[in-house]
Image (cartoon, rainbow, N blue to C red; front, side):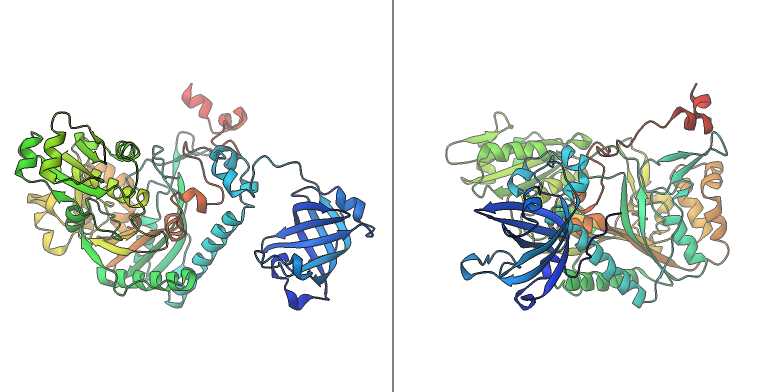
Length: 579
Ligand code: ASP
């Protein structure tokens, strides 16, 4: 083991008041610069950088000359004030420097494969390379800040919940299916060949059982696993702040979460959220913003097309005609057209028509009627409109998603402006692509008591006691009051198409537990990765996760998912099962 002088100070904390003190720094060589017969070595640790000066009279001069960026060093030296001409106002430590007395090189570094300290070049560095060398990518100040911020936020949330009498409990990851509408990741059991654990999609059922067990106020920073197709900004595993409370109404849960969020924003970002947070019902959100996670920092509401528009587009009766208009704000018409085409979803067979009008062009896919559309919409120069025709929900959602993205693309809101709100009164059920009725949240969500009678007659119009927390156009949380009655829970599961056998096999334990004194309870889960990303103004959650998978759900660094050794497959009898 090399012995080395241990740090007495952090690099980033040295200031004028340290002048004259002897300090020891441990860290990495950030840059080496030679001016005449003097070497200037910037030494970095997680707090910042400081300049170390090695003069040609130093016995370490020659060794110092062999230093290259990212070598690991222990440095002893004396803090000196820089001559006025050499003060660097851009560096927090720019008024001082450290005159070298001893240098121990703890490790060398090869030239690093990504330009981590060149912000411009990093913009063009592929994400694969960043993830392959994530441990280097994470040396970037921005990534360090992201993870420090995340840790601080978690600390604030945890303290806040602890002070309110919540207890943190861990629940299993290896379980039976805990459905949240995704596919389960399965883990084969070696001891019971042919049987599998499912990695929990969320702690949902366990937290409900903790309420039945009498804990009353629970939370957990839980990892959730969902085997979904690669899409947008998804990760196969992500973190939720999971919360559950007993003897509460919907208002109680929402008010607790508001307090938590207000405290978190105030303590970490020094931003004050409104009290109370605004609320929209699901149907209002859909009508005005087209989507259940609206960015309310800007207007551009979704409108309904009138009869003339319907006629111009030959819209069949029964189809909704919805419309979004916006100004180009100096963006080129071609670029806007491409943006629109790239973002619009055609899910549910919705048809979209756009018109983009600039000084000298009119770009449109509405062949033959573009001029008519301009006239009917009274579309000025520098304006654009997108009209969606189809199923009301699908057409609205396509425009709503476009609207949220447009907000970012056209910079309709400032990144550091935060608009948090609740969306409530979601339907309990919806129809999926195949026309099958599925839960809008999950099957354990309670319907509004006054709607229970509609379960048999008009199930799609039953409203749930659920709520989503939305921030700047992203869903950052969702939860509900739960069913705490076996008869009702069985009924809902039956309505979702489960046979009695499937129901008892999968959820028998929950149904049974509901009969042993299940208190009224409800809760929420906050998506921690997304919350941190939005708070920091990042569009991707990969920026705030230390070791994420890439967009293809793989890890370029470790090579996960990888092929296990055959021996292992034999042990779990996998080879036998598939052959
Ligand atoms: N378990 C739900 C989810 O993962 C959240 C909740 O209902 O508390 O979205």
